[in-house]
Image (cartoon, rainbow, N blue to C red; front, side, top):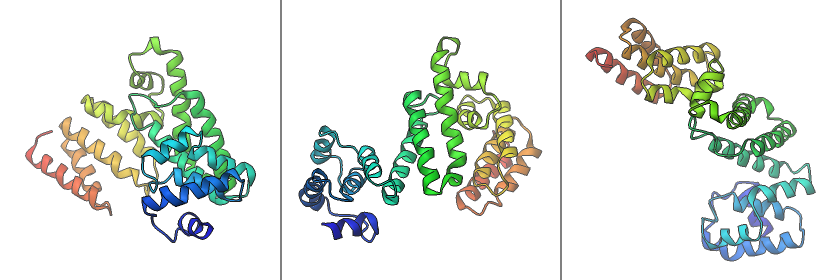
Length: 264
């Protein structure tokens, strides 16, 4: 069992384990080892729960009913051995996925309560610092931290605003984290002048080498077309076509077709 778990979760030598093997052999053995406080068993059980190997059926439900969760088990593994880099890396990945999920419905709202979001972010910052990857997460941490604080502030002042989007627009009109969240909403409501202003602000703030640049160029080109500013639209479409990524080259061709036909 130790060799199998090391190969699957520590060395990544196995891409996936068959579900019947996980359900009938791996999980029962890991639970026995975990109950006996054997080294690494809390981490492995946490990794099983956090993986797709287990599926979403009865065995996962039984573990959750027993009070066992992926993040809880990984925290337990780290409490037992603060130098367990594998548990720390796995917990960082779990948090990363959770935080992105919390924000995936922006600008409608944040899908968790502000206080627990803030606590998780505090722990996450400690983890990435200990793991030596704080710089890699710096930009995303600023975004997550901004929305954990803004969401809490919005809920306290909810009566003053029609929506979280309205709050971001009124209270944080120039913050890049707010502009990122608002752009799809502004585009959907066809507020093209504000789309152009927001995209331009974001383009000024990101490095020229940032992959996000192509995203903001697309928004600004769309806005220029909708506003009838053909010179600005042509400039942005030309720049977008220089992207090394096929998805943005294809988008540039689509916008160029719109430009040629003269339809927003």
